[in-house]
Length: 261
Ligand SMILES: [Zn+2]
View 1 (cartoon, helix red, strand yellow):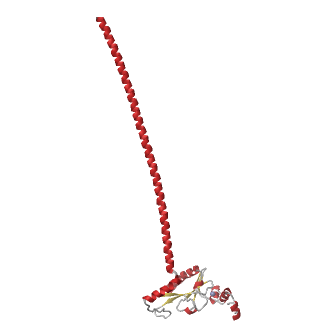
View 2 (cartoon, rainbow, N blue to C red):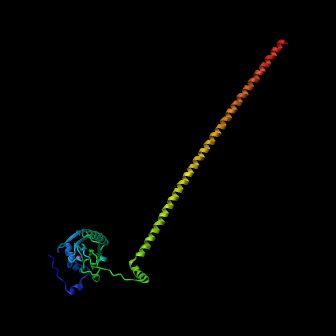
View 3 (tube, rainbow, N blue to C red):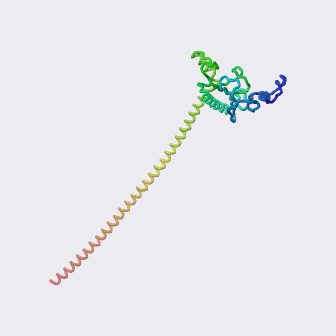
């Protein structure tokens, strides 16, 4: 059985804060009672954010009401996380209805405010199947001039902020591009520095090798000179020896000559 709540007088209502008014609305909300299980319902689905029940006054067979578990009167009051989850569930419910009833189409419908057809102060998404000429809901399509469309666009745009967001996104992209470019330039510079350092080392190595070669060549020349000197000295010595021998021979010849004299 639903809990009985005391209704405040008009005087008491005037004195209430927005929070107190919301609390009162919750206490009187049929859908909060359905979610709490205080009023029976044909529940189809529930998760941490939302509950789906069959509408007891369906627009068509299998008309589902998807409700946030917490009490919100209209869409703008709801956390984005809950909105996101509910529309994913609505898509799945739509798919289930299409399959179960072999339906050709569904409406996923939100009435935001009494003027839009909202009948209860608890936000909900209606999901229901459509048939040919079922007369449930047709959105009128009226012609409009290009100029009037443009005027409407310009009127709406400041409230939507879509193009502003696009410009911001583009700016962000450009900023990112500049940062990427800077990073790339820094990398290229670093590579250049490394290459420079490597080249320096190679040049140094070549220089060392060259000087080593030079040294070796010089050494060889010096060695050759030494050898040459040695050879020359040997030749000189030999010549001296020959001269000596010649002298001895001459002396001997003289001696022989003396013998025959
Ligand atoms: Zn409620």
